[in-house]
Length: 126
Image (cartoon, rainbow, N blue to C red; front, side):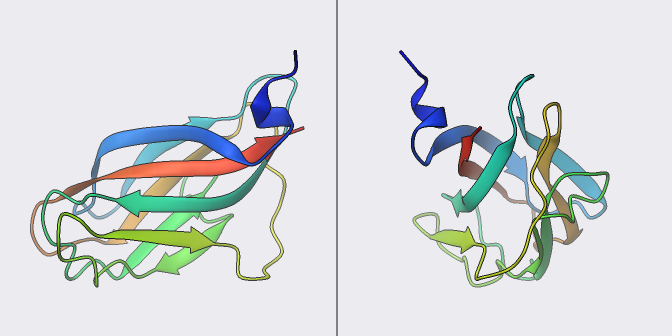
C-alpha cells in the first residue's frame, strides 16, 4: 500500500523545542527521503513556550539560510502559549525540494526573550 504522504497533503514532520530567539541559527525540520521530491504546502508554528514578540524575520526552506520557500515571516504577534500561525505559499512560485534536501527554519530577527516553539511541516512527496 502506498504511503499517505504520496497520496495526500500530510504531516511530513513535527519538530518540538525549536529555538525562536537566537539569530543566525538554522534548525533542520525535515529531510526529503531518497527517491522522492517534496512539495511543501504549509508550515504551522505552534505552542510557543513564551512570547515571540520581537520575532519579525524568520525564513523557511532549504539551503544554509533556509530562504527557498518563505522569507521574512513575522511571528511577533504570537504572544500566548496557545497561539499558532499557519504559513502558506500565498500564490508564490517555489522550487521543488529534491531528495536529500533539508527543509529548515533560519532565525534572522528572533524573539526578544528566550522562547521555543513546535513547527509542523505539511506537504506531499512524489
